[in-house]
Length: 129
Image 1 (tube, helix red, strand yellow):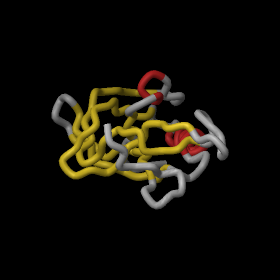
Image 2 (cartoon, rainbow, N blue to C red):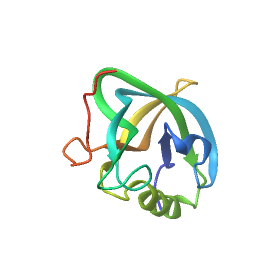
Image 3 (cartoon, helix red, strand yellow):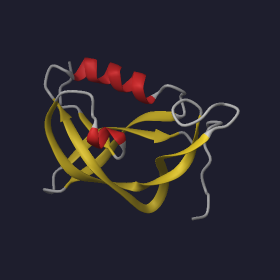
Image 4 (cartoon, rainbow, N blue to C red):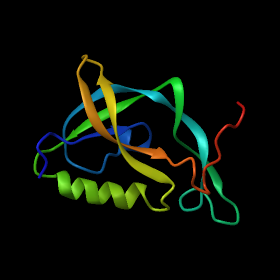
């Protein structure tokens, strides 16, 4: 059990399908990260022989990503963490991090946020628009 509420930052499919019980949700901003086509997907959008390019959160000073922060229903934290790890860490290209996000109402929360690992073989950052 956690001492503080578990918040999760969503910027893609988590927005329309969190897959866990939500007690509260709010539009939120994550500073220092951008959503970009920087990951070669070998599981959901491609294969090892023909990877598909997908969006992920890539670190970039001065950038930001708007998304949705979800506060997990109290008592569902452990199940939520297990489900998100199974869903998001399928190829270990993502890192499980805690990031400071600002909710639209001005509150700041620490949110579980999955970001791309720039040292992973599936990282493909720096593409021009």
